[in-house]
Image (cartoon, rainbow, N blue to C red; front, side, top):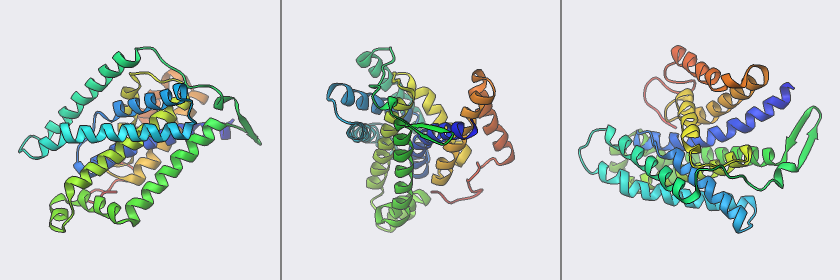
Length: 292
């Protein structure tokens, strides 16, 4: 029972981590919370669903399509809702309000395009199961764990070792210094928003597979979970987003398994509040300076 629930918690938590990574990237570079990230995640889920359902592609092609569509949507948001504000002396709350407007627009658009009802992925993958001693794991869970952990470690390596990754980290530390070093910060910000949105699109497909349901309002609830993980792990901390998502997912699953499902969110968020009382900067955040 324990090991089975641990696998279930890791599966759920890995999707939370992917959602939180999108928040973390934008928070680290732009120092804002992208309130439209949950809705971009939702659009990615629908793109993946329609690719699988109507074009009959396999799930990996659907994820690639969702990632591309979400990245393009993130690019549009950056050009139309964020970049114009950076060129003006506006309040630091202006970008936050702008992304809230984008989120409301995308949710309304999805309701009109896809309808309010929940839609399910084809169930072929969910029927394939493997038994490893006391653990029963489905092919869907293997795909979710493999894709999630693979993307997380690739992103971590890319940020640490590649030239573009180092430029993103430099821009996150200090945008003025990055400009003086010859880094095209507008291009780096554009790339970061596209990357964060693309990760959100993949997470949307994985969550749709996990719960076998996609709906226009799913962005709000998952967006809040992503924000919770962002705060739990430490603002702008990649490692914190990865591990924070896993902690939240495991906490939720064990609450349902050994407690009451109605207290699932209450226990998880109560744990976050308690941790923040003890360590306000988050589990892996630094008290001063330093991101990613």
